[in-house]
Image 1 (cartoon, helix red, strand yellow):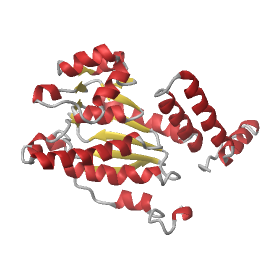
Image 2 (cartoon, one colour; image 1 turned 45 degrees about the vertical axis):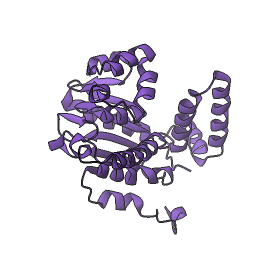
Image 3 (tube, rainbow, N blue to C red; image 1 turned 60 degrees about the horizontal axis):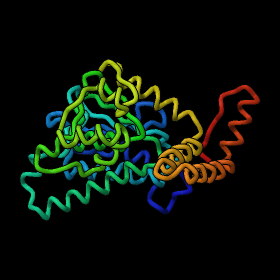
Length: 280
């Protein structure tokens, strides 16, 4: 990490793992995999102002420090909830001005997750409602326990999704189904989430984390620069027309060609050995 000496990031991976958080927990369950856990099971892992601060503190540096953690797994503590969304008990105490400021903070946190160059996998261990589902939808893809349940119930509470839900859910399930789910505040099951493209796979609850970490480990074993460039090409290409997306892919490819990992990958293939990718 010497390239970040003087910028305050040289010890960040160690520091973030040693830091004591109040609403989340962080760990490195397998090498180069950062696990971020909503850690308020007594409150269904509901999202608070402090949660937004703490999540931002974890995700924002990942835009700069890219050579240690290669995958992030986002999950919830306990077996009942991934994240039940915004903590309405806290919000009940907020003035209108405080509500606006809190949401601006949460918007900043959502952007940090959405813009994270490192792949982010959600492991929905239980209910993902409201902002919890929106956070899950900001991840690159998601796995779910067969007991998980999902909903964007905001319209039944006098509000509407405000952390990307109207955009990410519609892109996952299509406009007409998204309107049905959001306007009707309809809950749906893990199996429905799988059939509609909200999650990629569904596992028995006791297998969820192992299966998620297995995939995270597989991704972490691939060339980090190639993974980042492919992630960006897919994401931003889908926001444009096909020809523009192709141009974006070619630009991403050309940036990757100059990496040492590209040389190592080809050499390892020809020498019939496992590559040793350094993220350079």
